[in-house]
Image 1 (cartoon, rainbow, N blue to C red):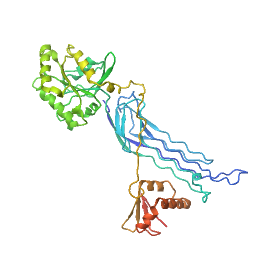
Image 2 (cartoon, helix red, strand yellow; image 1 turned 120 degrees about the horizontal axis):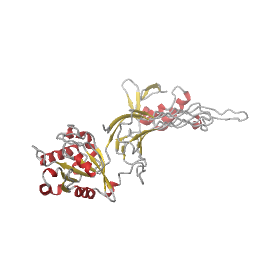
Image 3 (cartoon, rainbow, N blue to C red; image 1 turned 90 degrees about the vertical axis):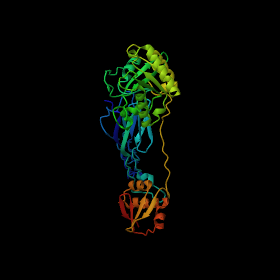
Image 4 (tube, rainbow, N blue to C red; image 1 turned 135 degrees about the horizontal axis):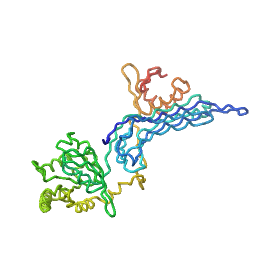
Length: 431
């Protein structure tokens, strides 16, 4: 069974706390503060691994990175938390907790999905000309955490689509070295199968997508689960059985086209080659006549109409030439050989730019019970990093709030000394 979708919980490691320490050595007067910084928390990273086929081998649904170590005296910085790397197959799609898109296609590509918390500063970092012996430090912050969903879109240049029992699996077996299940009943293919079409100077990957029935885009049948695997294809090979009894081949063709259009993602706009299968059942001459009639009626909607027989080999050489010519050369370069790092990969990293919203990135609201609420990511992080039970830490925190403009905003909102202030889940009287 192909595990092509997974939902996992990822959590970056907490940052280590800064240290409060003073240098005390014989014959060294005025040693001063020497508390080191805490180490940053580890990250959760997706790593593209060409040996993985799907998400079935992950095993766990929760991935937590290591916490950073606390700072120590003698200006020793804590060690960084250990990263957790999750191997995923090429073709993995998703988004990070920050909303950045993930698209891993080449071996060696990585994407950070949960960043670790920041390490706290030691007391040495708070030394100034008027604060020469600070007895407080910062606490490390929590890492990012949450659920993310990953999905797999197979890396193939050509997608074989069509209704069940149209002959896609037999065709794939003749065109490539793949050995899909072949039988004379519908739904023999229960998951996508990949094969490589070899030529003298190039190769292309072909994916056999399980049969599509009417209503597949809304979730009926089996094929709807695998329509996402067609998204990366450069060309569609639409296999139609013109010999199926009690069915209208043109109606079945249009039904599949309707499902591709209903799914979206531009599938109905992909270049298309129509393959009339099972030519051996009607004879080569009749098969050629059918192909000519289909080509005349479809016109420029398709690249070509080719009649083939997987049993006798009729038309297969022409189909190979047509598919090789339809797939752009640059599309083939996407399929990096397993174990080979992608050369000149442009996926070096992604960056998000945060700009403060409102007044300095925070807001002050007077609540009905006489208290005041301060909201803002930066302000909440500031309170998270300090011990509110430490008078020196509180004094430093108040000076930072004045510098940022929070105290002035409180006063404009009607705040008076001693009123209750709320930040996140914290409630305290501010004097």
